[in-house]
Image 1: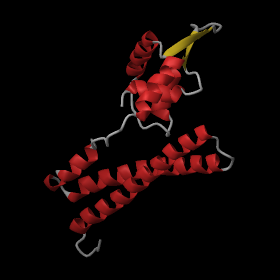
Image 2 (image 1 turned 90 degrees about the vertical axis):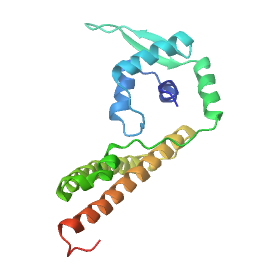
Image 3 (image 1 turned 45 degrees about the horizontal axis):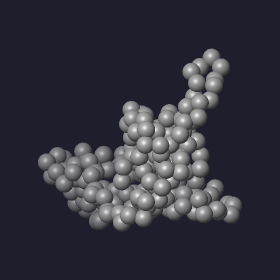
Image 4 (image 1 turned 90 degrees about the horizontal axis):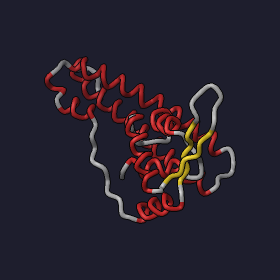
Length: 183
């Protein structure tokens, strides 16, 4: 998967500026792709050159004109061709797992502290996702809404698994700190 596919999928039936797309990637919990602002703008340029997206210039008072991008027929063809291709599982590249792998080199308290910090981060994301789920489920869903809902459900499961794994890992390391504690 490339950033271009993620941008095309995000545009869907909406129009976004480059800045708004970047904000979607950094702030919106529905996105599972990280990209810098520079990467987003670079990819928008390539997609525009390919004819996959088209800009609309929106004049603004007292500020530079805003460029809103929308997906074109060519962009939809690129996206639908890509969707039809088989996808392979992504390799896990998780810094915390590497730290846990080497945690025998530090005192258990150090890795426990990091595990608790990460557990909190995942718990907060999980709570936000569950709130979004309650809002989404409160009204009938279109096919597009169902597609977004399914990615949200995967996000809920992902965060749930992280919270549970962090608890398990904390308990395992805590038993080294307090041998009387059971796992």
